[in-house]
Every structure is written in C-alpha cells, then in structure tokens.
Amino acid sequence: MLGARCLTAYHPPERILSITAESLADLWRELLRVPHVRPDADFFDLGGDSFQAVQLASLVSRRFGVEADPDLAFDRPGLAEQAAWIAAQAVADPAPAPVPGAALSTQQEDFLIWMDEGAVRRDIGAITIATRIRDAFDTEMFARALGEVVRRHEALRTVCRSDGDGLRVETLDELPPDVAEVRAQGATEEERLADALAIAERERTRLSDLTRDPMVRALVITLGDDDQVLVLSVHHFVTDGWSMGIVLRETALAYSAFRTGSPSPLRPVELTYGSYCAWTRTRWEVNRPYWDAALDGVPNALVPFPGRLPTDRYTWRAHPFTVEAETAGRLRETAKAYGATPFMAVTACWSAVLAAWTGLDDLVVMSPAPGRTEPAHNGLVGCLVQSLVLRIDASDAPGRAELLARVRRTVLGATSHQLHAYQDVRPRVPYPSRIHYESWGQPPNFPGLRSEPFPLSRLQENLVWHAPPGERDLSAPWLVVEEQRDGSLRASVVYNGFGFAPETAARLAELFTAETAAFLAELA
Image (cartoon, rainbow, N blue to C red; front, top):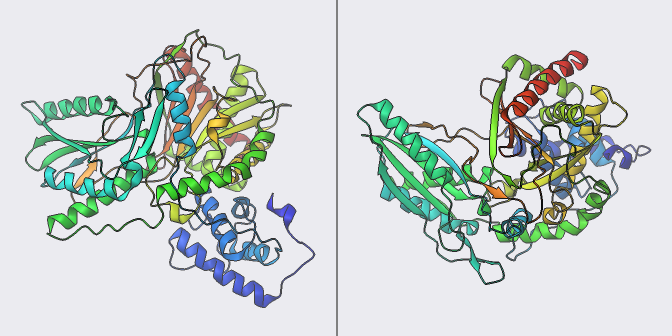
C-alpha cells in the first residue's frame, strides 16, 4: 500500500503543501473535467472511478516525480490528503515516455497464439455496434469519412498474412474499409425493423478473413426515407470496446465536415498505437515479478465445478437478469463506505457464489482493464485491453467485509501492474471464471445526426471453438454487469452452451442475487 512508503516523520512546510495542492487540483480538473476543485474536495465525489484512479497515479508520477499507484486515490481520496502525501515523498521514479517503434499489444500476442493452438484455426470475431439514424444519410460520404479514420489509426490497417508456419502481422499504408448497403424488406415498419435486426445479427456474427479482408466494415440497412440502421464492425484483433466509440465519434466528425464541403477536421495522432505498444513492452519485465508472485501455485481452473459436462467444444450462451436500481444504488454506496468500487463489491459477491458452489477457497477470476493508464491513451484506437487474473483468497470462511477487503487488495495490486505479458500468464490460468463490469461510455449514436442505439445481442452465439487437441474444456461460467442510465445493473451469467445446462446458469444468477442482498444486509 502507498501508506507503507509515506515518510511520516517529515512534515512539509505549508508553502510546499499549498503549491502541491494547487498543482494537484489542476490535474484533477484535467482528469475529471470539472471547472473547480475545492481544497476539501473528494476525488470520488467529483466523479472519479477506479479507471481514473489509475490515470491519476500516472499523472502524479510524471508531474511530481513520485512513485504513485491507484491506492493513492482510494487510501487518500481528499485533495489535501493527496497533496500532503505527495509533498512528503522522497522517491523519484517518473514513468518512461513512450518510445517510437511498431509492436503488438499483449492481447494481440495472445490472440495469435490462441488462434493457432487448436486443430482448426480459431477466430475471435469482430466487435460490432449499431445505431439507428433517423436523418438524411449519404452512404458514399460516410465511406469517405470512415476511410479517413482508418488512415488516421494504424491499428485499423493491420493485417495478418499466412507465411506457412503461422501468421505474420504487418501494417499497410492503405486498407480501405468495406462499406455496403442493403434495404430491409417488409410491408410495415415493424416487419422492416424485424428484418433489419436479422440482417444486423448476421452481419455481427460474420467472420472476416484476417489474411485478406479489411479489418473495418460497415453495413447500412435502409428502413425508409431518412431512416436507416448503421452496423459498424471492427475485428477484435485490432480493436477493443473503448476504441469503437472513438471510431464512431471521429467518423461522425469527418462526415459532418464533408457534408458542409469542409476538409476533414481530424489531425494525425500525436501518440501512435505502435509507440504505445512498444512502451508497454518496457513495462512487461518491470511488472513480471508481481505476477510471478501473485500466481505462484495458482490453480489453472475452477475444478470441481458442479454441473460441468464433459466437452471439447465451447460456444457462449447467456442467462440475463437485472439488479434493480435501488439495490444497485445501495451496492455503490456500501462499496464507497468501505473504500471500494462497485466492481470490487460485485466481484466479492461473485467470488462468494463461486466459493460456495465449488467448495474452493483459491479462486481465479479474469477481468479486462482498459490498458489506458494515461490520459494521452484515451484517444488511441487499437486492442489496448489488458486481461487481469484476480486470485481471490476465500480461505478461512471470511466474513463479507473481510472478503471485500481481500478483493480490494487484489484488484488494486493487479490494476497497478496491469501492463504485463498476458500471453505468458494465460497458459498458467487457461480456465478462470471471468467478470466484466462496464461503467463507461454512452450507447452508440452518430453525433451530428438524429440517432439512437439499435439493440444487438453482445454474444456471438453462432461461433463454436474447439479446445486444444486432447484437452477438455474446463471454462467456468462468468458474469457480465453493465450499468444502465436508470441506475440499475443489466447482468448475465455467461456459460459454455456445450458444457453447462441453462438451469445451472439460472441457478448461479439466483445465488448472485441472494448473495448481493446478504452483502448489503451485513455491510450497509
């Protein structure tokens, strides 16, 4: 914890504290996008979250020359507390600046291994978003705008070429997106909408050939005059969920400029994806000792897992359920009272369910982190996501407060060391449970035009993958939680449709709901 490094015997002069607090307040304003920061301000009360706590640590390290990590925001949420800690430090270890060069992210490295480790080459598929545009729309102009965005971001011009022994990755100077149009069929609006949904779902699940096809494609489904559905797909090998929002927003900006006869407002990126990836590689060895220690003796799967059926294939299915807004609100407030985030509280509840279901006390749960550890990374497009293996200690029947404290320590440790070589970690833990907690971003829309989200299911349920030859699939059900505008949580228990019956997933959802209620009853 950061407190262990605090020089408690040293009390900086008031002048130094004042200067430090003023400079720190500037960082808060930049990061949290607030106009004013009072001396008694609280980081989380101003809208900070765990993702921004990571970025704050990076900004503090750079500006003040101290060694900060995300614990700073959690252990000292107040501006004055943080300023006092910063002023008292004597350690200078600024984060290295990004270095030039082309490289792949750790997730891309792992994708390459994963695609070729089975008897048949596997494909992770595309990330797809859809928006309904109720406005005049020029598909040709949209294609031109999307092409501008592809030229701007080198990750979107990345391809894999087969060289006989595997896949060789290269970045092309030009790789135009594939943009097509189709008209929905039906005599009524309801029939056309149903047809558009079927078309969009087929487009979402369509696989691209990584060795030949563009990584970016779009389909415009015409419903009627000034009414269409835009389906945008980017192969997961070159993008992540955060990046999709950037692609859509920048395409809309270019489209709006072209519509008025103006040139593209988009400028070359200051930090390239290749430079970012090259810099993250310098952190792999720095963070390796943490992961070696954290995963020493880790189980490679949750075994036994009652209800698991023997299979060597897997395909995703989901059992959806909802955590009502009132319960979700209490969960957020309770987590905050214990210095934790809603994600940590949800992870603690899910871990309790897993421990009770399996009888295990050494639990492995994987969760994605954005990989955007500095504000300069926020505008990058690429596959930056980091997969963090969280090893949860459920031994000695901890109470719910103690389990939350253990989860908190684990999450903060993993997040602080998130830039690591996941392709080296996954073979050690190939079958964790997973938890995805999504709290950022807005529903897809096309800025500048009247638009609204067009619902698509998030899982590609038509894809079937095979375990490596001679292996059984030991994947465990996992949890997806998405914050909604009304304060509720939309959740799903996701499971292998070949390895588990739907009733097992439904029962796990019921247990999670019950555990959440017990968590609140005990801690709220």
